[in-house]
Image (cartoon, rainbow, N blue to C red; front, side):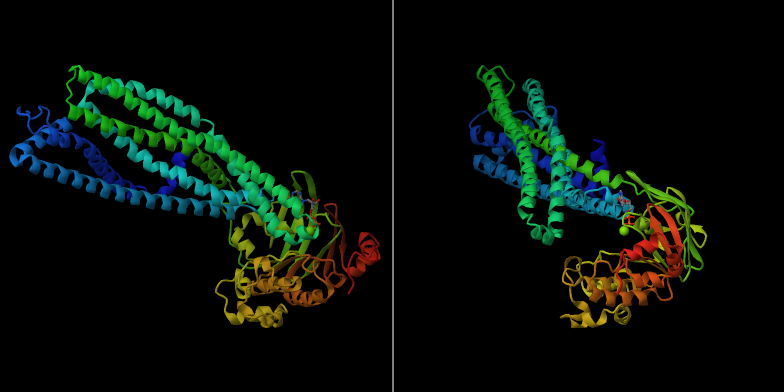
Length: 607
Ligand code: ADP
Ligand code: MG
């Protein structure tokens, strides 16, 4: 129930929908009930026209609606003759049906708008929240699960939670209207009927009980499937080259089977509730006919035949809203389960937030310092008591064996992760005291994996600088050594580069990434093995581009190219989470330590 209400809270402002909806629904229900009640006067005009005795007007007026309708039908009979009365009654029936359907239509439209509005809000909130999560969050999550939550769970909420809204508002009203009519027509029969209802309610609730957990599990399996799909599509070349297609197919298929099996089990229960309740409903009607009919046959009842037929008509309809309610309760479980998964994602709080007194940092003047910084992943410590200084305008190279913590250290500067102990200072200000957006605007990032988007070259370069002109983009591309190859593509800057830049070579991708960083023009550059995935030829071009990029900037570079490292102002040798050597190339060679050994082992490509 709590989940349901929270999901509903996304329908704000609900009053805009609720008031016209209630109005239309109430009117719709009234006319809908009238349609059935009009059965009695119809029968009166058809069969009662010879009867001599005039019916008195019912004493309690419209509290006895069938009585009143019968009375007016007979009056019409007396005034206009049987044919005239038949015409009147038919005209009334047609207008009532017309009105009830007009109101039904409007109430459904309003509800549909509400539903779409709710989902719009829900989807936005969920996506916004995911984008706001700290970077570390994503290394512990399955991407497919997040995708499934935003795509299919939100959809599931639509199909059950919001569609039950309609049921929840309308059907009880309709039920009350019917029950009122039943009591107004015959108290005795209705009391008898009410005894029978709880029995069917109990049976239905038994059936739908397990549906919720199954629904949650089903969405989880679906998330796994999306994960496999995502991995399979991203790694298609590797999969084929390693001849793993059959393996991957089998993995996906077994997940698919698991998901389908569960779907079948759920459908079995879900589908069962509808026929069971229908059967119970008809059985109840039969019991009423049996009981009420025998009362009439024995002349033991205050009902006449026309009223009894209208009574049965209405009673048979009572089951419809009752059935709609139970049906929607059986499907609401699936929706709630999905709703919980979506809310889980909405409730997830980023671990790295701006401090309340965080400031905007507009420029970089002095230095970056790490003081006694330590950091561990839950599984293992990575950085241990790091103390370094990166002065403005210098190039600092990070070298060391793989797994030593170089990338981790770099992630500390833009606060993708937070130091566990010690502090990271920019111009003497702790990064935790700087607004993240202004912090990020200080950095340009080029990684080993060039992250590009399926869009035009122009859009990819202008990615971090919306509003950049064509001239600026082109100038950045020239600096990044990218202009020539861009002009050789079919549509120049407006060529689409495919998923993750698939239509470009590695070196071309990297140069686009560099152009992107050049255009953003940040004071500090972070380069994490930006050339290590490249062949020698394109590496040269990229290296030139990088040199242009680092000119007049402060850079922290993780590199494997001797020339880059040699030219660095400061070289930090990181091993096992500690800075073990520090200095320029000549000094470290003279020191004859790990750096010298790495050089001798030709760890670095010497071009
Ligand atoms: P380098 O860049 O120097 O090769 P990294 O900084 O990437 O090394 O990694 C340092 C250590 O931290 C490695 O041993 C790696 O296994 C571990 N590590 C990196 N990322 C994570 C993560 N998201 N969760 C747990 N451990 C990680
Ligand atoms: Mg690394």
